[in-house]
Length: 104
Image (cartoon, rainbow, N blue to C red):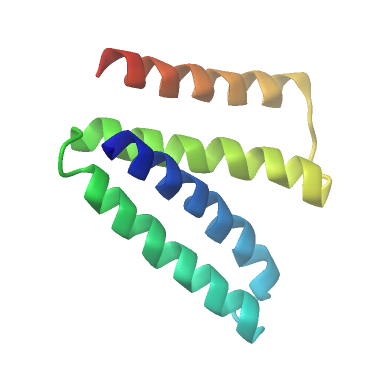
């Protein structure tokens, strides 16, 4: 169950990271409320996952999911560059996340 909580926490991290773009500096009410709720829920689920997972593994996987998802959505939604080097580095992050999951 801890890995499920961690996965959902990572997805919510993607949500709040992308949500920050839509808040326009927290000047738009609805995006700001949704972003704040995603932040709280993400950290709460991370905390639940860390009851049983090692903190180093849990935190690294949480931030890794957030990083990969946010980078890919930045490419898809905001036209950020999708160079071979950038995609390769994202692939390395995914490999690290999988390695931590398999090692734990």
